[in-house]
Amino acid sequence: MKILITGTSGRLGGALKRCYESRHEILAPSHAELDLARPDGLETVLDDLEFDVLINCAGMVHPDACERDPLSAMQVNAESPAQLAGCCQHRGVRMIHISTDYVFDSVEASPLDEAALAQPINAYGRSKLAGEQAVMAASSKALVARVSWLFGGHLPSFPEQMIKTALSGHEVAAIADKWSVPTSVDDVAHWLEHLVTQCPKASGILHVCNSGQATWHEYAETTLSLAHELGVIPDLPMVQRQALDGFAGFIAKRARYTVMSNARLAGWMGQAPRTWQEALRESLARGA
Ligand SMILES: NC(=O)c1ccc[n+]([C@@H]2O[C@H](COP(=O)([O-])OP(=O)(O)OC[C@H]3O[C@@H](n4cnc5c(N)ncnc54)[C@H](OP(=O)(O)O)[C@@H]3O)[C@@H](O)[C@H]2O)c1
Image (cartoon, rainbow, N blue to C red; front, top):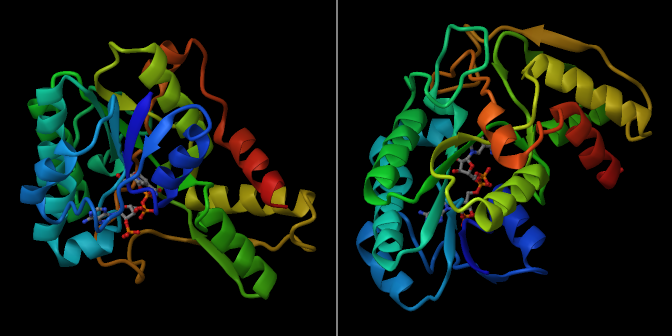
């Protein structure tokens, strides 16, 4: 297939490109070539490109940057994706739009399915929810894939930060009362390829994440214990517990519980996604 992927300098887009390029023809316009901060120019750029499916991984993804500049966040995360979806609809092409668990802020302690009420509490989440709605309004075939706490790929993420801190000998600390699902970009690449090639009817919202759930504290402990087992860190440090309330490092408010249920994804895949711990072990072993 000819797959157009945006955001390939980023974590997820880069992983999709690397995973697919041996089996598919990949078009990967750069940020400068297809700038989502300029919605008006997008149609002209797409007019010159031939593709069977568009996967939009580009976005303004840092909650604090979105909080500082909510108008740009709306433009990049909602208005431009809507333009891309409109072009795809016009050409009869499917669009996969990547979204986030940050559309939620739940007090529930059980995994949220696709019908659960989205109530974002920061500018990032509001812009991503507006993007989901605009994409689905513009394109009847669009699939909105919500992902969470991505690890893997060519850029360092939470596990690498924890390992780096442990190796530096500094205290390792992580928030112990905020829950989501760590998810492997390689697994996301595998699931999306299956959905693109085998499931033409998959549309609407889909939660695309590994199985299980964790707090950042549990995620840090598991990362360090696997890293220790793999010989990446010589000693296993204690991870100090931090609380979300009063945490000084954030500008944007962070949701406490955004764990997504992947039951619908399991239905499309014909089996339950593996746990985040299994995926993390494989990812760390590859880098060890
Ligand atoms: N990372 C996570 O844990 C996580 C969690 C939930 C959801 N998501 C979602 O997953 C998707 C991919 O995230 P990621 O982690 O891969 O992000 P990332 O590593 O920050 O990559 C973002 C990509 O978007 C591009 N981009 C930013 N502004 C752009 C613009 N105005 N026009 C065109 N391209 C632009 C960036 O290009 P430059 O490098 O040139 O800036 C980069 O290629 C996003 O939709 C995000 O909301 C991520």
